[in-house]
Amino acid sequence: ALIGKDGYRHYMLKEIYEQPQVIGDTVNSYINPETSRITMPDLPFDLARASRLTIVACGTAFYAGLVAKYWFETLARLPVEIDIASEFRYREAPMPENGVALFISQSGETLDTLEALRYCKRQGQRILSVVNAPESTIARESDAVLYTMAGPEIGVASTKAFTTQLTTLACLAAQVAHARGAIDDERLMSVARSLREVPARAAEVLAHDERLKDLAAEVSEARDVLYLGRGAMYPLAMEGALKLKEISYIHAEGYAAGELKHGPIALIDDAVPVIVLVPSDNLFEKVVSNVQEVCARSGKVLLIADRKGIDRLSDRVRWSVELPACDPIVAPILYAIPVQLLAYHTAVLKGTDVDQPRNLAKSVTVE
Ligand code: G6P
Image 1 (spheres, rainbow, N blue to C red):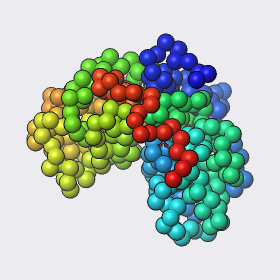
Image 2: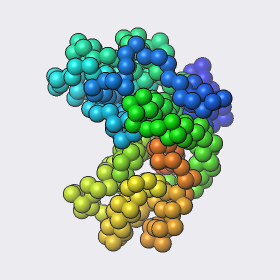
Image 3: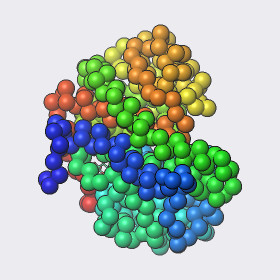
Image 4: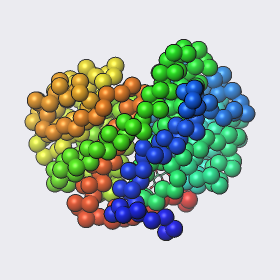
């Protein structure tokens, strides 16, 4: 490849470490550094007046879309429908009048996502995409494109593309929220400020690398791993599980913590690490009680939380990693990093081909 690893052992690790930089580049392209005003490019349609937003993507990009659903609904009060492209494209979903459809893709070439885009176009939707690769087919066929500034991503397991997708979508959701009157000027500014602080916070999170490497030794012994979260941390739990299975080949599942009692709690014993993502947000107490349920069944919990969660739970859980406290809106961006590092170090310990995992392709242009 033309792009080197800059002394990193794998592209994936290099790309994880590039995140403060590329998130910063993405923030700077959508937020004016002088005024802290969010300034998305003008769209050829009015997203704030759309009757509904339909989000379609595959893999990691789909999980970015699922986080964005929480933002668009909670912050902007805009109804969102979301599905994976391979299902969406064949189910002949009825589309609303005045609807906008959003496609998220690192490569801009994923065939299922592209075909879903074409379906939505035939159904009269306005087409918006969030794409990393500029000259791509999805970018070309969209009415408007928001670019992520991740730069080329070589590692098959997506890392910096994901966090820059989240950054772009957070800017968009905040601007739409403001345009819809769902948030006031002050909240808009505070979201922008929180987003501008993400690069510095992300660098702090990267400083936990050694600790996560130690924890990876535990995870690498497991046959199954559970990831739990609620709200916008639920997609992060699924993304964490996806990263782990993609590159370490350990079976992992991401679950909504509140759904635990409807099945996966039966799996819990001291051989199954349970990784729980617990930022201080409006669901904090709910997740705390889910963690207690797991501990009461001798589950080995690995807590990823800020000071509040650590203070509350550290005497009950087996391990913990403390992340900086942050605005809940940026938590999904920051919490992505420890799950990436955990998967990475676990895969290295397992001796797998981290950048080229078996059976997987970086860009899936066939069905
Ligand atoms: C492949 C990659 C994943 C990626 C997915 C969607 O499966 O291995 O990392 O998330 O495709 O790719 P896209 O380029 O559309 O984001």
